[in-house]
Image (cartoon, rainbow, N blue to C red; front, top):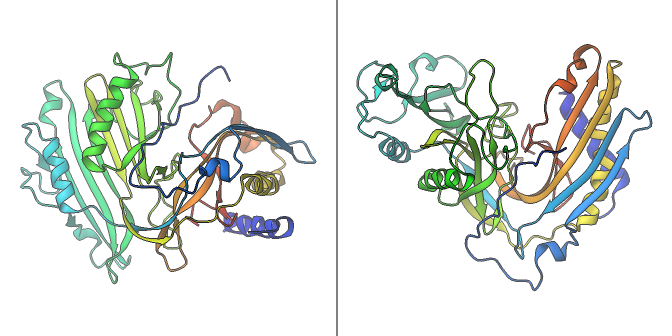
Length: 412
């Protein structure tokens, strides 16, 4: 509720002030591949909107505790227009689950976690423990594994699919997720750390070789998904894993990527928001893909509006100047806070699946401000500087059409 009130306050601030509609290299965004036809308008979007290649600015609160430093690369797809397009969240189909399992069977005998018997090829099944629970949704899952390989000194294998459907409407009520593991380590989607001298510390293969593995795996599932971010995974203290390559892929529509956001695939499941970022995360080691997570599949629906009129970049930055500092300054209410900063290193134009008032979703062009946060002081902030920067985290999202601020936690 506090975050909702903050967003409402920020919106009021906009109405008052806006008129009109380190030595390490950061993980690099891939050049998006172009799909389909883009309508030529004579000038690329970057030129039409007056977008520079970089932007520098600094904003500081009166107390000096809160500040935002912008020293950012600006990324705009080489396209002539952007549309509003219907995004249709959906569960995984039995056909695509079956195809995924077939690609990874490799002569294995899969065991059904529910029965502890040999897997017979069935699709997801309704979980009986949720039937009649009064939760308002039915939970569907499929979990298969092979542990013989593990006991013989090789990898543990597992494929896990899960989602929930509203018992009355049959629509999604819990976000869909497909996970695949082929490793002796308990791997998971994680932060993307910068590479070490251009390579992942725990791999002998090059970035280019690792990407070939990742591209092949992702394009077999979603041909219109392309790499949007990469790096190496951290070493988890409890797992003590090698640092493998980690890639993130999102849909690209007519040359425009759906903007990535670290953790954006997870939903609060509040206010009926159940479909976050559609993203595929892939971890690659020397012999290929050892982990994959596919969250929130969408179908592309009808084009709602073609060639949208986007706000000039200068006006977007005016909005950021008014709202950015307000978005972090409220934390100064805590007497423990001594330092509250944001360092914006990248500003990117792309799509986001934005939830509409009727609980449908539209791919909307947005500007994402990627940055690092530092919170430090006493009490609950005492260890603030012990945590390293998170790469790929969108600190603020602005609708490129009307300039409204979007709360990615709730999808609008």
